[in-house]
Image 1 (cartoon, rainbow over the protein chains, first blue to last red):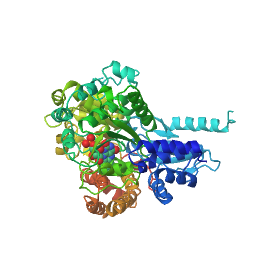
Image 2 (tube, rainbow over the protein chains, first blue to last red):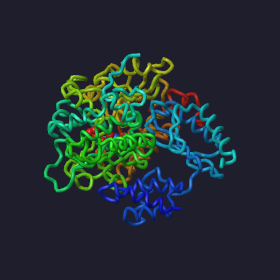
Image 3 (cartoon, each protein chain N blue to C red):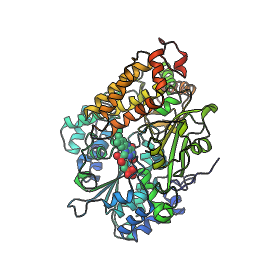
Image 4 (cartoon, rainbow over the protein chains, first blue to last red):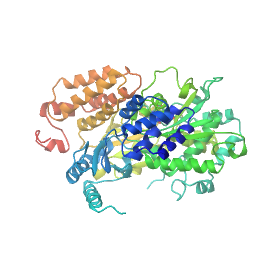
Length: 163
Length: 432
Ligand SMILES: Cc1cc2nc3c(=O)[nH]c(=O)nc-3n(C[C@H](O)[C@H](O)[C@H](O)COP(=O)(O)O)c2cc1C
């Protein structure tokens, strides 16, 4: 749900800019953070804040790869697949994660625990191969480390949520 | 290990240098104070004298770019820092933002002052969340200490800094697409002219500079333009942060004088080639720059020498490919990037990059035909120079250069249906 507080946050950002329309990307980031993906309600709120039609917001969402127009897993794992990571074995990292997490790249596991994505160069070529877990970097990921990570994440997922 | 020459990255190893207190204890913001006591034109002159050229790729002289700003426009002037770092092989701007955010903020403030700008934007690539947190915190600290915002250091000068996060699109690193994105639109490049200096963000005269470029400005002000111009070569002044990745023992960022030989960078700084193997190819400036073969290992890494060798210094992303790398496979991987990142506005780039990948895939996986190599060249020809921005041209760099340098590998794929070297050479075609 887009609460009044969330909307107020978007408005505060919009006020920083010389023109409100510039708050499009930041407002969408706020919407996605609040709801996990950009919902129709989220788009509506953004449209109101920046002062444009919902269709225009939709066109923005479909252009920028970080916005999800559909629900994603609790953990979104992005594996860099570009050249420097490729030279250091990212394809094996991806294969390990696909196997161990039980989900194909580009997909979300049926139970909603994981979304696994191949992404473009993440500006971390010096510590290749790299991945991001919910937008935070994990660097120098060998296939062995990937297997360990997959185990850790699944144990955490299986544990009952802490109150 | 050989010492780096730290100018932009001065003090980066000092614990806590990302905080205002430690940064100031090491002389931080003294350059801003000095600049604010000078006339803006004098600050601009100092940057001109330094010979600083843009670190975003094209290498345009920074001071000259500033002096092109339209005068007497009815609209305000804007400054945008390009921190969209997405070129495969580069990872220097991220390091500056995460570890030395105040250097960037100080550079933005000085540059805004020199160009008569009251509103500066820092456009940070969306995927770099930690970098955005660090720069955001630094901006806040600067505001709280009266170093940014209204009446900076009591001088009566106002400069606002707005941090803007992107949302996943390589094209937004292209300056006109960046401006569109900043205005809340799809990142489609604009036709030039008008150039940003005449009409940019919100139609106002705009300067766009790379993150490393702007982070160099405080050091130029602190030590003088002539001091900076004394580093490097005749035409490529100063230092450069070389981002070394691929098949080397110690990949990483190394700040060194312009003109440092490629071999020195790879052997003395990046620890040599992994497993003691030989170098097959080097991409000297990020994946948009043409490949070089091992015969070019002794070139000095400055704009002119790299150009003379047949490539570009670009964003100084040095990617090393060892002797066991299948060139067709590597080029396929690079081309997929451009296919996925083409914004779709111009047909030659959108369709051309798609067909380049189709052909390279066919070659890589054993279904290639003899005519495919000529066809690849032909498609490249139909992309180059035929779109609004150079993204499509960039896609052709690795293909054209690798066909020239490693034709035997392409031919081997055609005749044998597999790679000449590497894992793909050992595998049966069906399994590959
Ligand atoms: C497709 C494309 C992507 C680019 N990406 C970046 C980038 O991520 N960062 C950057 O500073 N410049 C990038 N550039 C170059 C910018 O258009 C521009 O030249 C640069 O930001 C100017 O700053 P400088 O003069 O300080 O180098 C890109 C150019 C193109 C064509």
